[in-house]
Image (cartoon, rainbow, N blue to C red; front, side, top):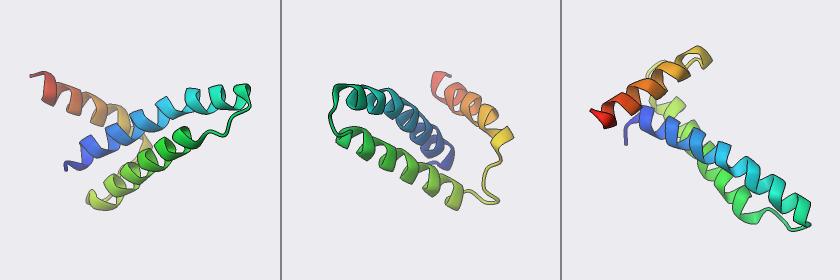
Amino acid sequence: MDTDLALIIGLVVAVLAVPAIVSAMTDGRAPRAAAIAVMVGGGLMVFAVASHPGGYAISEIPEVVFRVVGRYLN
């Protein structure tokens, strides 16, 4: 798997888990599925950073997002 794609998928999964965590907490339920989503997203992000030569800087993330989106739209 491409490290750029793994980073973006990991970020999206982790960000989408936040509303699920808030929803579960307000309903008084344990956020099991959201916790699994956070672990999957975090694992993908760790894989991407560890596999990419030199890692990623925070300032590179917008460029990586546009590069991945551009690659799959064209």
